[in-house]
Length: 453
Length: 184
Image 1 (cartoon, rainbow over the protein chains, first blue to last red):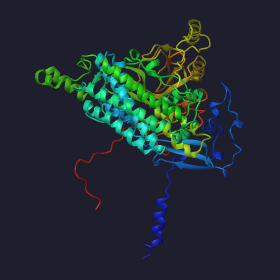
Image 2 (image 1 turned 180 degrees about the vertical axis):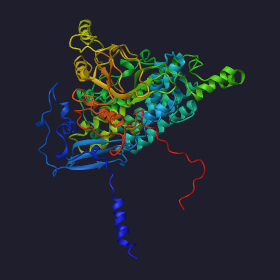
Image 3 (image 1 turned 90 degrees about the vertical axis):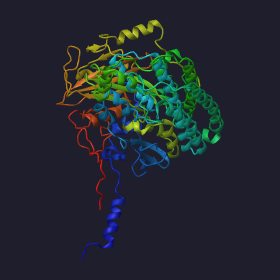
Image 4 (image 1 turned 120 degrees about the vertical axis):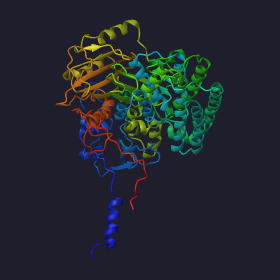
């Protein structure tokens, strides 16, 4: 009768409840057990060393002992870490000394999955990476596949792609405005951002059948033509959202509390941003106008008139202002695209790439065979490798695609802008207050689906 | 908010001399096989020994940013097209570099043998490569001596194996179509 003493059960429960999330060496270690090189990286000293120089041990404030500082966890379940981002912070009082993002909690092996799916199915996989801008992911995958296939897609498909990309940028930045407002305590902005984004999602539902994860942009064109009356919908979206961006100005831009929390917080220099491979609004906020739509044009962006918005100080407020003004630039672009939408096919008329229309299957044996082949085996892509990079709302999204001549990619790698931009977080947080951490993480705009893939 | 554009190519004289320095076989550049690429101006195939040196030369000739570093396991596709003089190995590390000032991209493909999957780190040249090298180490098992913190980044610390290798099977969860018998 020895089993079942109540204290045993309680002890077991305590042990269970206090089990820690441990990632071993991936975690931020105390200074005593960290090598000088890693410490240098974590405090950003490596960015300050001159060309070809070696790390100066004296540049790191190593004299700080572990008992003055404290290492705390933020996440992965913290509500304002945008998903399952886990940050380990070394604090001296309220000042952040070192930060280390610990990621991988959402890793689902999507690059491995991509090797098991045909090029036709691949779009359904990549669209789930950056779930706030799914169409950009589909676009980069489709462009990479087309570069290997060497097919010329019809002009209407290109312009539909541009229209969708720019609506995507608006919706993604509106979502960012919403979550950023939420992080800074402005629940009204949260509601407004989601309200405006809803208009775009409703339009997409009309066009693609889905609100998110559309698989709409496919190798060879787009899945369906724009529905009747799309011009009116786009017009309403543009008018409404442009008008509402000025309401956001009134709500946030001039508000003293908001400005206090944003101005001068999380500043970064252009050299640091370039060295850390940072792209997108964070790079623009430092004054570098590197927008792939302008500098390395893809689709037909070189025919459109738009401005690249850049900042001066590289702080949170610059990043906020850039995203707000990007929405206006995208409205401008969407209007131009809608006005110049060419007629014609919305996908390439190559029977080996594009499945035949449903009506043809009933009358033509060949069409039936092509339909069957494309959906069971997929189309074969010539051997080769290509790296295609386009501008996502978060920065440069790249797709490195290797084909071995079969109908499945031999290797499909996505360069996620959030994954790379996350490296800027330790540099942005260093020396700031813990209270600003939430605002800074928010201004980096990481999407964990893309970070972990 | 002022829109400052990066100088596309600069005045013709300066651009000409820059391009001469970056041209194949130009002064300072190690002699490595090169090929033109799609969406990229050139693809360089350095041997492992001069990979880091080539990275340094590219950085000195104006490629300020490292866009992407990844790897490919060519275990089941050994007969790929490579320029003459490049011996195919199992792994290939692929680096995409970007010149913001000159609006150019280059790709570096370096062969890494399966017996000793090691490659010099580029971290001292491009600090932004840190997470990418960790990812390649995690998913391919290629080590980067000199990297400050070479630990797994996406997989759990105690994971066995490197998932993106071709001899690593695709795990599947069996799908239960009928109602499963309950625990009781």
